[in-house]
Image (cartoon, rainbow, N blue to C red):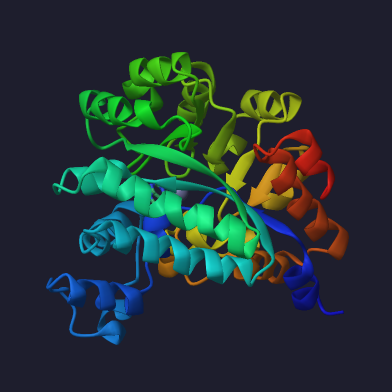
Length: 326
Ligand code: HPA
Ligand code: ZN
């Protein structure tokens, strides 16, 4: 079989996915219309032409604008359901997805409206599509720690639905240390923790995520390679990195997929995984991310299979659930 067919057939996980980043232009126009809201672009084609980014911030500005048409619980349901049907068709068996409550609560959308819409779709996806899930609530790091605390308070009655907290949005200038108190409280409350670190920010941010936020995974982590001591730590403790190849290409974290750090990371025995980040904006879901990287780096079938297995290893499935796949 071709590499492409091989990738399609592999059971996969998705561990780095912003649900707001799965908002396809067609659905965005549909939901805007039924909410009587206007989008700044004439049509789907015009909107898609705006998807050209020089860095993370240029992407975030468009991503937050897109999310602003999500108002009702059913909007969040439809968004999540569209994502799940898409990846279930790509043989994704398990997802651990992010949502950004502050993007919505700051516009007056109630926390529960967001959470219930997403959660009900995830439940239905588990039953009807066989895709298991965990949910991760992210704090927006460009906002202050007080706002993150408020968001954590809103999550406390929903520990049955939210397993972990994470940290996303504009990285440079907003180090993990800015959120050490709210993550401490989250840990005391029993949440697992993850954080975006080393996408555009320096290796110091990865150290802070590990030592101050006590993360069990690093989201992105590309820049760990600038610091040999850090690479050694990540390898020894087998801390997973959730890499996002097409995101890295589109946000100019790498110039070309041929220059992606994955092979160097694998050579250092890092537990690397492939994920899609914001697939509606970066031109590909899971199979496209595997395929783009495999093509650019000439990955072999055993290497690709290892990456898919790493996803299960790095997940929060229990050992019995993992055993089926690794
Ligand atoms: N980095 C930081 N924040 C984000 C991202 C990302 O890649 N995607 C959505 N929010
Ligand atoms: Zn991300």
